[in-house]
Amino acid sequence: MWSLVRQALVGSLAIWTVAAELTFVAEAEIERDGTVVDITSQLDFVPQPPRQRWQHRSPRRPNAPPGRGNSKRDTVSYSGNWCGASQHSTTSDQIVSSFSYFTAPNLRLRPRIPQTQYAAAWVGIDGASCTQALLQAGVTTVVNANGGQSAWAWWQWFPEASYQIKGIPVKPGDWMSVNVTATTVTQGKIVITNVQQGYAITLNINNGPRLCRVDTEWIVEDFYENDAEGGKQVPFAAFDDLWFVDAASKTVKGKNIGIDGAAMVQLQNENGTLSCKSEKWDNANFVAISG
Ligand SMILES: *[C@@H]1O[C@H](CO)[C@@H](O)[C@H](O)[C@H]1NC(C)=O
Ligand SMILES: *[C@@H]1O[C@H](CO)[C@@H](O)[C@H](O)[C@H]1NC(C)=O
Image (tube, rainbow, N blue to C red):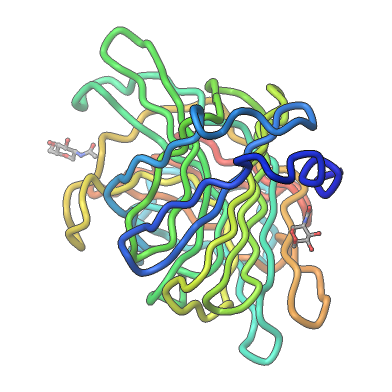
């Protein structure tokens, strides 16, 4: 399907290139319902501060029990910024792709914390045990003091900046899919699809920061406002149950990795409150629940 679309566009401006941070190059094409849209006017990348890799947090006494759906062999971990499932492979059989459907965060204001609150949901490779790089893409939603929301898709090759993608409309609650592929440790491909609105963007990225390709994860994040390690996190909104569906990774040797055996990561804020719990449903599906 994609190659047919591309052939139809030979000679037209179907590829838009951005030199990001001068270190790597991303090319992108957007299609809508199988047809490439006028990307020269609709596609834009807006640089954003980078998100952070996993801030490991040693468990404190949780205020709520970990998810009942988690089975005994799934490790429960705690993080100050991540909530979701984190899987590990080995350097002898590296991760090649990470995929999931998920819903764009649909937010509600939390009382007693500053208004204008956020949550991000994304799929990525590395950033957990491999802290030098993280290739990721997803959706961030913001809710303002009136309860009004807006959402946008983005991609990032940490530690480089993250880029907001204009040209892919996203509404809170829309079903999205993200497929992040690391063809090599410095070459990536990202496909972000708004399944509900029929848009897809394909990005090919070269010369990215060197990945380890040993972690794969599906995450809801209370991200950092700026680049400073240990800097300020955005106020984290409450959200509707956020399902990751058909979550799966592939390795170089063709092994499929799902949720079984993953670290189910719980987001514990600075006061010890679990502001997001992740509960496994089965090997392909889990839910992040606002705490
Ligand atoms: C994700 O992309 C990779 C590489 O293009 C592909 O092999 C894999 O099948 C894709 N996964 C899904 C679920 O589409
Ligand atoms: C943690 O508690 C302090 C003191 O009560 C409060 O100011 C702060 O907003 C709380 N943090 C969160 C994330 O709720």
